[in-house]
Length: 258
Image (cartoon, rainbow, N blue to C red; front, side, top):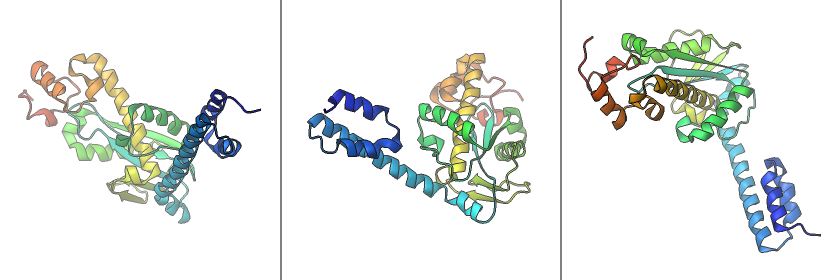
């Protein structure tokens, strides 16, 4: 007896991706229009899954190259918050398991808020080790943003619970670390480890800025995350700066006493 179209659709929606081929086989001879639509959607979803497997293989190239050379713990490192007018710069270092397959890992800027939040939980649960580095706005002013970024990257690496034997960094060579490394241009979209780091660093910093929004609500930090939006700049002109503003970044917006 044929299942109803409604039951067939519900079965499809509840399937694990790996079970879709068997489902497709079970309905491929059912010519009802509703079932043909379900079949089309099932085939599309599974083809997207196969394409994602290939994409993850591609962005695991640098990690696999390290494993082939005998390195066991490869850390991806990335930063978020180099450009904002307020708040810290945050980095993350992430060591994933060999052969890790986490769907949708990519440059955090290419992902939605909800997707980043979901991936944050998956990455932090499945990682061999992860850690954050944070450098304050005051120290950014004192040593400049590039040096602050390097310092945060070193912090995140040094505090990993598992010590890496190779580092993949997004676009930079981190000075004064005694670990072999490779700086990869646009690494957050070319390396699964750097992509993972970019996602958890972004989520972590966003949460910090949302907390600051409760303390300094006039600047809209929950919305702009400290970046120079029109709303944020107008608030600076109206209210002046607050303790988490980077004075070296806002000096062209407002006059203030050192």
